Image (cartoon, rainbow, N blue to C red):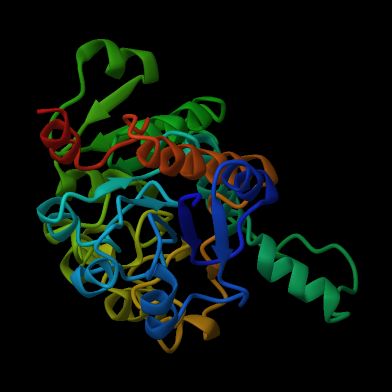
Amino acid sequence: MRPRIYVTRALPQAGLDLLAGEYDVEVNPHDRAATREELLAGVRGKDALLSLLTDTIDAEIMDAEPRLKVIANYAVGFNNIDVAAATERGILVTNTPGVLTETTADLAFALLMACARRVVEADGFMRAGKYKGWGPMLFLGSDVHGKALGLVGFGRIGQAMAQRALGFGMKILYNDTKRAPEELEKAYYAEFRDLPDLLRESDFVSLHVPLMESTHHLISHAHLELMKRTAILINTSRGPVVDEKALVKAVQDGVIAGAGLDVFEREPQFEQGLERLANVVMVPHIASASVETRTKMATMAAENACAAIRGEMPPNIVNADVWDRRRR
């Protein structure tokens, strides 16, 4: 009998085709996040689970099928999976790192530009038939070139954002858990700052950190108060990195000038009041949503799952301890 895999939501066809070449594939037929009941039923009798960031994969899900070998996450993040529980049960966890770096940076910079130049406001103005002719004060925004960009997190996506900012002649400041090597700083003309100083000095602050206990509400009311009144906050990392209630109040009160958000604290819901703020641009978690990137993510996740089922080392292991134990 061929190994079996459960895919929690339809993916780009290239990934499904790769799986179907070797395994019996069951795909959740609903175009929405799988329910708890669907996850429990779907994983039963399967050798592999291909999950999305919207799926909570905990010990109960894992225990529903003792022969489960791998959980292949269709995301670079994996905070939706109880990795410790998987490791305890000898289940490999994989992700799709690297592939979405450039595409996510594209979207982050698009949000920055849209906020600075009031693109969404102006588009709505035109569609409402309000444009009656050019005026010297119509939709005045903020320049981007020559301004200071503060990057909170200077990993792959943060560096890709810095690369884009260089083309606009921006001053690049960054903060991370440790300082980058000198050659990396020189390559991006980047200057290290502690977080409070970065917030005080930056015209735009873009967040590129993973979600963990230490980054939950990393940007709080107190941090927003440090920012310039003309500053704009961009978040394409994880929603809970920002205290969303505090953000709404900060924008309403003019503490900061605006925000561009791809992620939200309690997705798919967002904090009441955000929708009424014209100087906040919101998009529905689409940072990696290009045909090319989502297709590559699907094939990477499929390759990870296939390798694990074949007894080979998956290309992108999160919990390498499990593989090491299998090799002993």
